[in-house]
Length: 126
Image 1: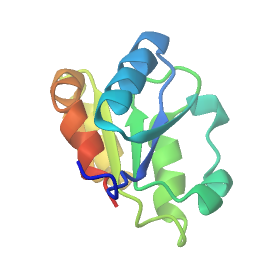
Image 2: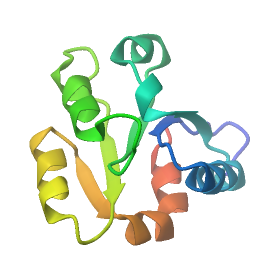
Image 3: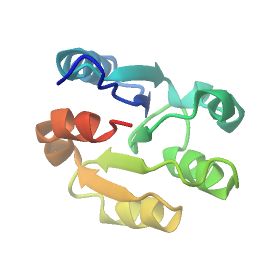
């Protein structure tokens, strides 16, 4: 990566502290700017100034309904263009469908998301 290249910021809405550590380590390795918030602390208003290049949601977050948070993000005229990737257990077909119906751009099994995390963060390059 050249010195002039700048990766876009990524907002991760994740409650799992072990997974947060994985996200942070991978972001550091690829040079991505990462901001992590707990699902309960997510507010669409705070995104207007930050304008992340990508929003990542853990659909199994326990502190808030991630599907509803995605719905709020995609319903906001100023924010709906922010790409959203969500991850979940591969057996949660109904939750996957609900996230897609809420406007999630891509829903991945957690294992596939984890395996491709470095590439996902690199693609947030702006």
